[in-house]
Length: 452
Image 1 (tube, rainbow, N blue to C red):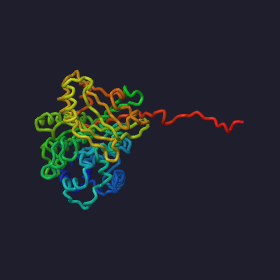
Image 2: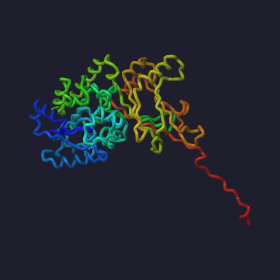
Image 3: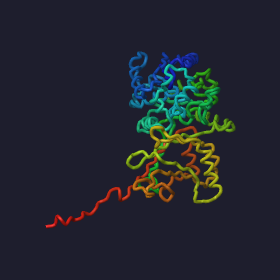
Image 4: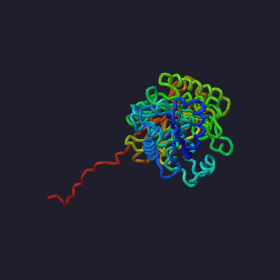
């Protein structure tokens, strides 16, 4: 059994071509039925929870679908990746009915288009060819926005958890994403490191987590890190955009794309590690071949920051600083620090409803070229407001290096922390200070009138 699920602002008819191509390629030798999932995504009242609950009901009502573990293969496109992950994360890993999951250009960690507004999305992406011209699916787009709490929490439900949902014996997940933007008027949507709609880095479900806790000793943060649990195959399909990779807009453009989808739908537990390695080698080769083709094809990391205090309250007014040691007043340090701001930090987006969460796009290619000396150390620090002691009785000691420590990265650590084509979630916890004036005890003054 094969199920295909579409993305935001789309419907099942867009995937009839892909379904027929897979039949032509002989997938029906292994699959008895093909079902095209259809859901509402453009209604402003519909939430992701509604879609997932409705998927449960639709699965129950479809007689060809089974709840037997690992009995169904699924293909998802774009937002469909969030839908299926949300759905399976509500189950015990051993009970998930999916065996093979193929994600085509999934928005696993959001899209830079999600917050751009109705007019831009409508004109560039949809051309206003919609039955709901004044509705864009507000809640769905909030989930799709870069640095959304939704995508952060979902990652902790299925990637940074004690449970294992992906890998041999579980869901055999393959992510395939293009590296080329749109043509024509839709090229307005093209941004470096994207397929026109999603970033290569936000599509990849192989993610990592880093935490720096400054609450105990502000000058010596306690750090911890971990990678997503399980294994996921990730491939970059050269020349494909967000639509063509899913056999839309006359695609696929790359002769290897359809065979890759077919192979992902037939991979076994035993062969899955080899499949992961093959796609990794191919992705590296694609990037190497595109070295001289401009900024669009650089390797970027989607770095998502979440900053809070020791009470768990969000800190929404802060600046992340990435630099070489400024105490060393060499011209090189000043030059490299300047180039980091100009060339390495390719963009910052604060989540609209909670600016304590921000996506910083890091150009890893540019960073590696700048930091080519193995004895140099990259520093990452933070300035937050209000500043304690600057006329404020509460706040954060983060204004200078004398107040708060910094995360210092060696040559090797820079290449471990900043990796192209992936998402890194970073949680920073600051200590909020209070002066003695905030709460104090006063000595009782004796009133002479009470004396006997």
